[in-house]
Length: 410
Ligand SMILES: Cc1ncc(COP(=O)(O)O)c(C=O)c1O
Image 1 (cartoon, protein in one colour):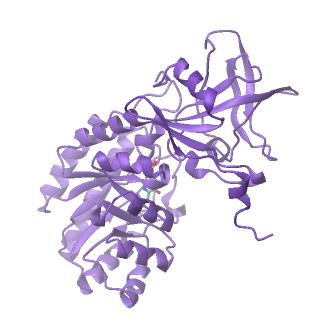
Image 2 (spheres, rainbow, N blue to C red):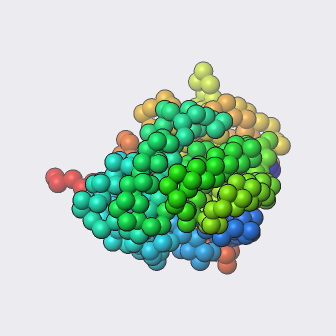
């Protein structure tokens, strides 16, 4: 897919007169459009998208999701608080955590969030301390391999419970008086192959029927997880969510309805599909270094964008104010961390660079800023929103050295 920017070069050049790089920039209209497309594609079902807060945990982004009718999927105390402060209530909040501290369960229960349990041993723990909520979901891990490159062999995954435990868990919940149930799995990540997504739905629907037949319970919702992929590379193709949705619809009818299940709601919890393509990291070239290779040293580093160092992920780069077809050179685009894997692009052909050039990294709107860290005392950048009124608005200021030292007592 051709990589384009939602704003003009002139827009960004003007913004750069007043704003320090590096910074993240999100496109509000693009985010709204992705949510609307998801809702439209799955309009045949009683469908709800629970935006995965971990992808872009900024309340301004969460509020956009809320305005578009989403709930939120939270995995930690901070994410629960962000959801609460952004106005989400009760069953608009799904709590999908693992190795969960009790205080986090307590917070989720106080918000009347839907609990999605990562292990059945948590059931007795919760029962001992609290009143079990009326509606509870369990995260399923079927083992095996759903063909997803990132998640791989599920027997190596710490998430979710095997089939036996799943059945044991629902039985126990039922014995404890719980009456409303959800079934959840997250078996793919950044998946662009429709067949792998459809396979997950088929598997979950078949599992719901099996549990129903064994225990006589119905499912209020089936949560297919997140994981729809985005084309990070220009040569990759956009996922056809309408095709995926229609295939899932026929499985829904042929597996769930034909076997007499009351029609469950369909939940999803995408992050990347919604904000991924609608976020940009704007950086400047500080130095060009000619060594065994040619290095473009920029003012951002892996503490601002971890995905290339962590997953060897590709993020397309647009060089502002330069014709992409002009003379090109091969660069490693690096940050200033004292780590040799602090490379945001490797062996990348770019228009010939010089100090001060502005590089725009594409598709960083999800799991970008949020995976940041402070190694070498590097500070987190600001976040800006390109609003639907086509204005730039700061939605998080950059960290300062005072912020960095604030937890020290010296
Ligand atoms: C449980 C769960 N749900 C949803 C997501 C969102 O995934 P994605 O942003 O790939 O859609 C994640 C990502 O880590 C996750 O762990």
